[in-house]
Length: 188
Image (tube, rainbow, N blue to C red):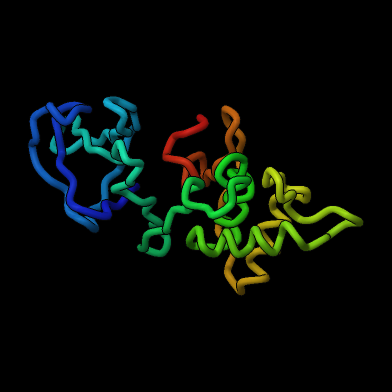
């Protein structure tokens, strides 16, 4: 389930030249069946009134128009996108670290950057820091890192499992992707 963050055109196909058949407004929720790429955009596909409908989920400027919808709390989770981190290591190799941040209850890239600064300078075993600064490599068990994040910020752990796809880590719960630091569906 995804929630729109702005008004988006609904189209008959995955193209800005496809007919516009309606709009979804900020706050509307849809069940997306798939994501595809076309015209430099990521398009979401959903069904409405028996018709397959398309909307732009990520535009050519990398702006997202949807966020993951958390049914258990009836609120949205703020996605932490790697490209927004202040740290090049997180931008390049930080997906596993950001998954631990998500499970540890962090809500935005500023909190993740703050934790990266602390974790990449705090030793947990001999000379090993929790996270290696040069490439964001997680030196400890990723779930222990998530617990340490939750404890440091006084947050509740989120449900989910960190899985590894095609050179990428993301979080699933009951087989459904619930967090992806790059874009929905990336790495599958």
